Length: 187
Ligand code: ACO
Image (tube, rainbow, N blue to C red; front, top):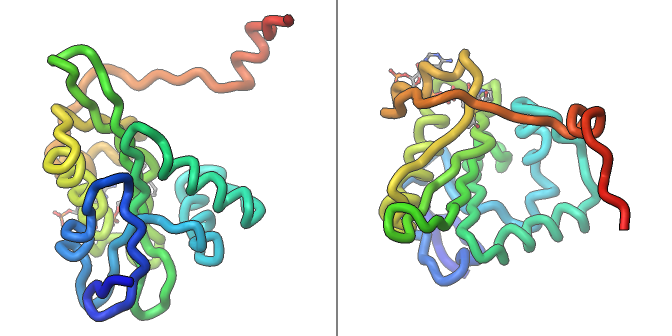
């Protein structure tokens, strides 16, 4: 059991990395930053995510299994949450996944995903804090040469403020379209 800004905190480090220094750096009197935990199915993680996209409730065991799968991945995959000290609820979250490549001399690329701040506390820099923490971990701890993300047009000004620049076009093919156009290969 570790202490973080006065609160007891069960530290489950991601692989061999010590992320506590980053969490301490960004935690304050109002919020605790930490990695998502298996028991967070009891908190409002999925309802926060549903402010971003479809995120229906899942069974607690399925939630826990997914967290274990993420933490056991060989590539660095971190879901950060900010917890309000007042309510004990998750108020913001963001994810980084690190891709290992051959280009750039075995370079690594960080992918930022699922940045979301609860509607009640938007405009208080929590989105900025989450993204900046993910950057610091990716560049300082993981040694990525760049971090990339996809976002809608309305969020472009938010990321421009965080030193992103626009490059290329976002493309996606969704399952329903794939199923219309292709048939599965049968054994
Ligand atoms: N347009 C212009 N400026 C913005 C916007 C915007 N839509 N959103 C934030 N900003 C500015 C703020 O004014 C602030 O500027 P300042 O530093 O000059 O004061 C700066 O960006 C930081 O803003 P925060 O207060 O940190 O933003 P917030 O905590 O409200 O979070 C977020 C922004 C995450 C986009 C939030 O609105 C949200 O959760 N939206 C719904 C989910 C979503 O769309 N997430 C992004 C998905 S993209 C992805 O995950 C890769």
